[in-house]
Length: 249
Image (cartoon, rainbow, N blue to C red):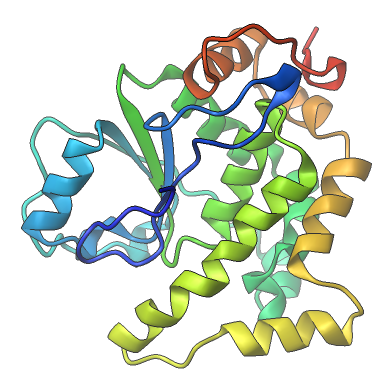
């Protein structure tokens, strides 16, 4: 039920239904991750609207955006918040030169170098108007994966569950590559990680268990109020405490 069929997209899933802190679960219809929405058909936009989405956050750089294939509903709020920070040429001279950019290997370095960019996206999700929020990049795997990782961590979703969510993109993206007549990146990326004696899932688990993500985001501008609003948006209404490491002071 987490996979959503929006005609024109291929890698859309609801972040609801996952185990979270204190025995709670993440809510369906609150936050959705996706590949680029500009390929949606009219039926695709209608499906998005029927899912309750009212805010779209586009993580792509300006030069990646194209015109919408079908008219975007007028009542949607669309925010452009580029995640990459491509102006930092020193950083990207390392991370764009090879398959590593299409893996979670760069998440930790990116958070260390430019935490304010991730914090800005999470703050926008927290401050979004009532209704569902969808964030997307191009393929919906890596930039969307980084934001999904942080959003789910705030909700107290265990690292291994977050990593499993990331891995689902490898199942969904072959259809997108085929539709765009592009080679499937999946086998290349898995081989690249295997040569480094790791997997995408292991990289995410290790990051979430070794990097002080809460303090990193706090120093970058994410406030207690943002965290509480994110939790209210993400979590069901049953009682439960957030893990101490996610309580910002």
